Amino acid sequence: MTMVDKSPEMLPSPEPVLDPRVVVIQNPDTPPEDYNAAFDSIVVEYADVLHGVALRLVKNPADAEDVVQTSLLKVSENIDTLKPGPLLGWLAKITRNAAKDRLRQNKIRPEDLIDEGTKFDTIPRSIDIDAYRDRTGDTAVSNVVIDEITEQIKDLPIEFRDPMLLLVFEDLSYRQISERLGIPIGTVKSRIGRARRRLKERLKRVA
Image 1 (tube, rainbow, N blue to C red):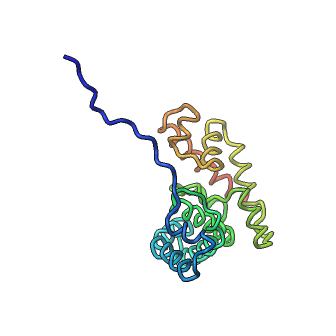
Image 2: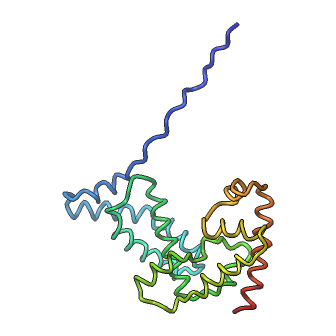
Image 3: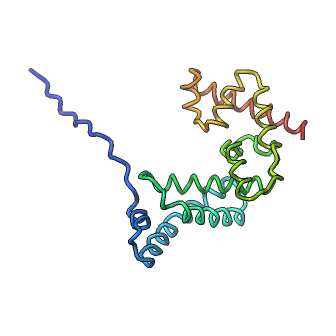
């Protein structure tokens, strides 16, 4: 007896689309009241989510509120150039970058960023430092944080250095690092944990 394959046909992934409110905002013929209503709707829907994103990074509710306000200003300045894709992902990225700027303003010590349990997306990247200086003219955000962390990571033994570089500067997940290096995910977690402890001690000594 011949078996009939009744499995559903694989469908192509849908093309990314713009949120309808963004379509309204990007339309040059949109009346001001409709523009404002569309933007306000986005703010109402996502403000609490973005506050949570900011709070996880800056740890302080007042700072998180300031980060959200800064983020929404950047959103209003750049939404005209937004391409099709998830709106929340774009909003969250802007908020994370604003939170990183706040961490630099607060002059978080490098060793504070190496604590166990701290996600490394709180560590500023060099590319963000340049953008920050362009906007604020603040040269007080010196190379101490960026360069010291970078140099200390490079000085780690290779088994710790490679996963840390992928985590910090390529923002890869543990699973992606595992696939990139060809080692078990448990090994990745163990090596990163040990690297964090070494970095924390080294950065304390050079502070």
